[in-house]
Length: 89
Image 1 (tube, rainbow, N blue to C red):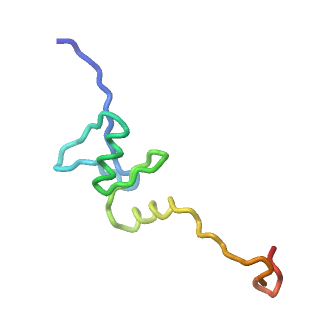
Image 2 (image 1 turned 135 degrees about the vertical axis):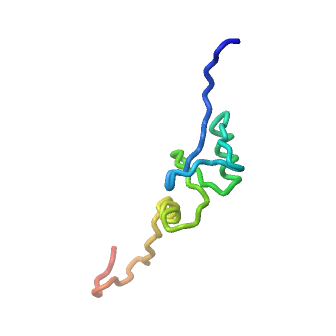
């Protein structure tokens, strides 16, 4: 019997380090697409830069998710007066 090397992927949360382990066994994915699909189906967030955030609902996980959001836009109409009665560009 020949010995072969196989490469597989596992997923762990970048916030708490918890491994993706449904039913208490370690899942080894064949490729990145499979890892993304199965973990997302279980409520995990996988970012474009390959960070994984599990579905735990606590302050640390919420802060990591909030950091992914773009800043809120600042709305100001042209010619609107800003603070101190000066016109904003």
